[in-house]
Each structure stands twice: as structure tokens, then as C-alpha cells.
Length: 223
Image 1 (tube, rainbow, N blue to C red):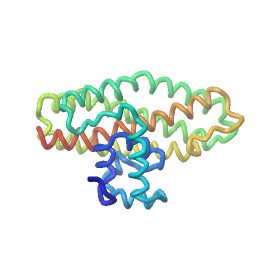
Image 2: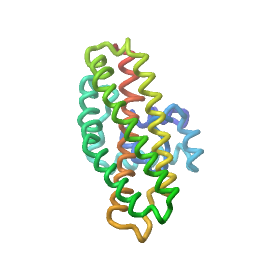
Image 3: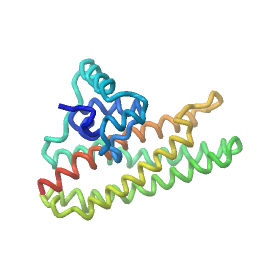
């Protein structure tokens, strides 16, 4: 039974529908998933009981509920991560890079410092993600698929550190874009960029949560 003393990661893992509620309240459930619900909710100005009530209400409306991955076979979870979260980035990262370059070039005169910072943070995020996923796909995931996750403590620690860096860049982009609020004068490309970056943020939060809080602990325990 989940309670205010349960961690945010436990809530997101055991009741996956909670992810959308946590995102709605700006609660970090991936790299910050170790915090208790009470502490995380206090920082967001709500109570843990209210959050859990929102999750229950969302579960009652949802049909079907999102799948729980904490009991799925590890190879199935790895394949899900590859198909659902890794492969889409093969096309989404270049698409967003094109939009970033276009928008930051065309509208730079409005806020040179701000647009330069957005482009800089985006390129840093992209350049972190590409080799990070390559290491997972070429080294860590094959170890886990082969049942050797128990020997992967070093690579897993490295991946978790890199997740923290990605999370920090996502937070910076959210601040720089004013929480992805689109100005009235924004053109279609500007609006598409803000929407794409916000969608990427939501996807990466779920992606990192499934690795940090589900895949990696299970691989270490079961390998």
C-alpha cells in the first residue's frame, strides 16, 4: 500500500498512470524518484494524499491502464525501451535540431542571449543522448539480455550519472523557454519547436524512470 512515506519512484512504478499526474505537478520521478511523496509534494505545493487521490481518479477514467513493467521479463522491458524510447529519437533528434537552428537564427534578434542559450543547451542534450544510447545498446543492454546484469554495476552507475546530466539540461531548457509558453507573435516553426521540446522532455522523463527505477535495480538483483 502506497503512503506519503513511499518514494516517488515506487508510485510511478507500481501505478504507471501516476506519471501523467507527476508531470502535471512538475514532480521529478526519474532522477529524483528516491524522494518520499511527502517531501516531493510539499515542494510542489500539494499534499501526498491529494496526489494519490488524483492518481486513483485517473485510474478510474483510464481504459486500459498503462502496463506495469516491474514484473515483466527483463528482455521484454529492454525491447520496449528500444522500440518505444530509443528508436524514435533517431528521427526526432535531427528534426528538433533543424527546428532549433532555424528558430534560434530567425528570431535571435528578439533575445540574442536567450536564443543562444537555448541552442547551446539543446546541442549539449543531443550530444549527450546519442553516445549514451549507443553505450546502452552496444554494451549494457546486451549484458542484461544475457543475464549478466549483476556484473554491470559500473556501467549502470555511469548511465545513471549521465541521466542526471540529461535531467539538468531538460530543466535548463524549460526555464529558458518560460515553461514552453508560446509567445503570441510566435511563428509556426517556433510553436512546433516548443511543442517538440516539451514532448521530448515528457518522453525522456518516462524513459529515464524505466531505466533508473525499474530496469537497472532488477538487472542488478536478478543478474
